[in-house]
Image (cartoon, rainbow, N blue to C red; front, side, top):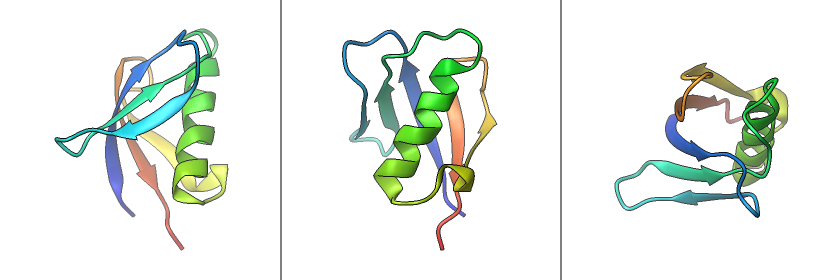
Length: 75
């Protein structure tokens, strides 16, 4: 079960998930950081990127901050 480090930028014009040179990911999210909307969008974005169900993606640490540790359960 890989764990990736993601830096989140909410309120972006478009949603994207890009791997950086240092191996971390940068997620730009349209959703605001209110009521878990940005976290829900991040889970959907990571699931789509890795080709897994949303249920296979979970935020392990940093749910309230910009730096998050996200685990992906690959089949």
